[in-house]
Image (cartoon, rainbow, N blue to C red; front, side, top):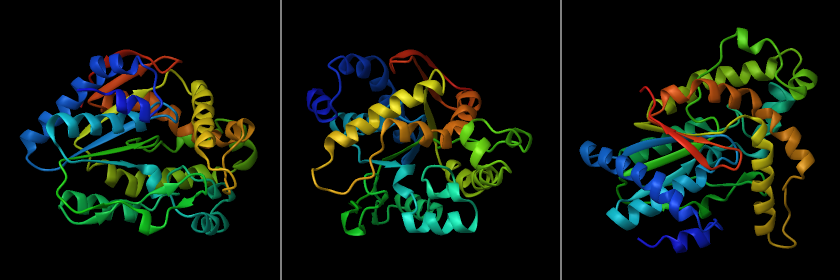
Length: 292
């Protein structure tokens, strides 16, 4: 199978072909075998910190399985279910100002996520939500792609996808400057944790197979997130209003994610079926089978 078009479309280095051959093709085949034996839609959860490459991985698995086995594969991101700016503003007034920023549990429409997964599982016609990060709002529903035939595999990726809630003891001390200055009483992080412990876990339980792209540490997330934003800026059309962030804004922004990213790095590997350990350049250094 020629993956040159995929590499060009995603602006990937030429050596991605070798990475795919060594690591991702076997993963895709394993997922396909699971689907064949199940005889029904299989849901695959993919966790990875911001910029770890989880979106590209999901797109590649879909590309591979569609081209080699003619499977109908749907790719979703937890980001697609973000609440609108207006909804987050209302939440920030009601609960805590930090909830204006999208990302953490509590800033997603979990009811919409639940109904979307239900429709996919039951072969119902459904429009897949899409979020525009440049405008920081959901795209118009008229732009949502419609799935109107049975799906074989659903890939769902997210930075907090699959992460367990923290204990109360873990919430006491701030983990960074943002929490220390802007959430000194812990109201925001406790709200986030309560949300994560509730409807999010119900969504996670629907996954049949788990994959993790494991960053070496949270320190690498800033570098990766900057690269991500620079790519977004390069694709932005001139004259179109944009909420693309500067490197300084990103440095503050990622502090919203530090607590749960570090929690994921320490707790998730043993709960996944496959863990790809990454180095600082996002190269895979090892692959582990989890203990599920």
